[in-house]
Length: 179
Image 1 (cartoon, helix red, strand yellow):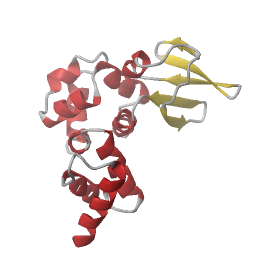
Image 2 (tube, rainbow, N blue to C red):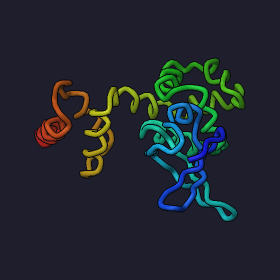
Image 3 (cartoon, rainbow, N blue to C red):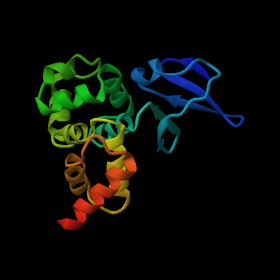
Image 4 (cartoon, rainbow, N blue to C red):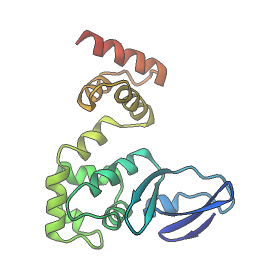
């Protein structure tokens, strides 16, 4: 592995992959030569295949939500995630705080307002329902089983915090079956 901000060169079974990462992920990378695990997103274009890596599933989800917005490309999405955490982004969206977003290099007032409008109810909801890794895993399991994100979020909010992931999934499924 070689590190050159904002890119990382990763060797996977003798094949080197160039991966663009936000600075939050870059700073969390292990030392060169150690094992690395990233959540990735591949964008295929006519002239290139670009691979993006993230330290957490939440970062990757936020990246995907950002690039769905008209006029926001992968570079801008990486800049946003480099300039603020996913929870900071969620707080900015929930509070409609455009000033906080404009502090990110490359984000002007109009872009910040468009981000707030497009992400309202998306990033904020997801950040509230995912206080920790366990809730995120349960949410992903429920969605994989065919429940809508809205149903899954509602079931996850009702769970007791001391349950293991398996117990939480069982409890959520029982709760959803009663509805």
